[in-house]
Amino acid sequence: MTESDRRSPWPREQRLTTDVVIVGVGGMGREIYGVIRLLNARPVDGTSWRVLGFVDDHPTEPNVELVRRLGVPFLGPTRWLAGQPSTTRVALGVGHPQLRRETDQVLARYDLPAATVVHPAAEIGPDCVFQEGLFAAGGARVTTNVVLGRHVHLNQNCTVGHDAVLGDHVSVNPLAAVSGYCRLGDGVMVGTTAAVLPRLTVGRDAIVGAGACVTRDVPAGTVVTGVPARPVSRSAADARPVVMPAHGREDEVDHPA
Image 1 (cartoon, one colour):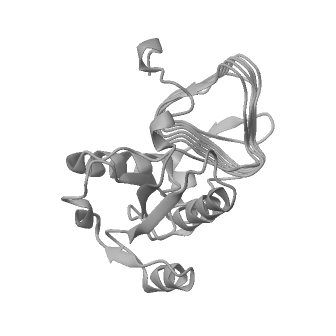
Image 2 (cartoon, one colour):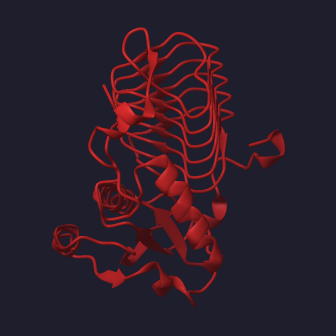
């Protein structure tokens, strides 16, 4: 992401009743639906979201049943989006960064704008700018002068410090801390309760394991764990619960502790 990619932090075109489709019936998609319900309960400037339903190319029956229990229809595979009006937004509920990137590429064929969904208890500070598709869960904190890329996910009670830059499809998991002046490349995952210390760079598609403390730069594609964080082999990381390339499967797995 370059400086020219910056966009206004609060897209005013969403300030009306907006149709939205959630992509992914897994836990992340259902969490996004929960935040949308809260936003509709306390609308800004009299605006609201109308959730048309969920789509998913590889749903599991248990997840589809959980969606139905929410009172929201399962619409079918992502091709359901074909022919939707250009005012329909998509909320990308895929937890794993690389799978989110792949799904984003699939959705590009439908040329629909992404929804930006920010929990009312999340805090986005002054001069923080982001591209479309941001999801910020309850308790997420972004301080000031922060740049966030496309489809960044900030999970419950995580923090992002001043002057940090997060690339496209980054995930900061619950209770994780990204310190000031950090640079996180596209597709980075920062695991639950992990910390990245100030002025460090974490390269594209790297994974910071749950509970790790990053004290030095992390090369692209590297998995680091522990305190201080050290690299582990991808094969060791892959021995953990499998992350399947499908929206409704367990794509929200937190990587090695």
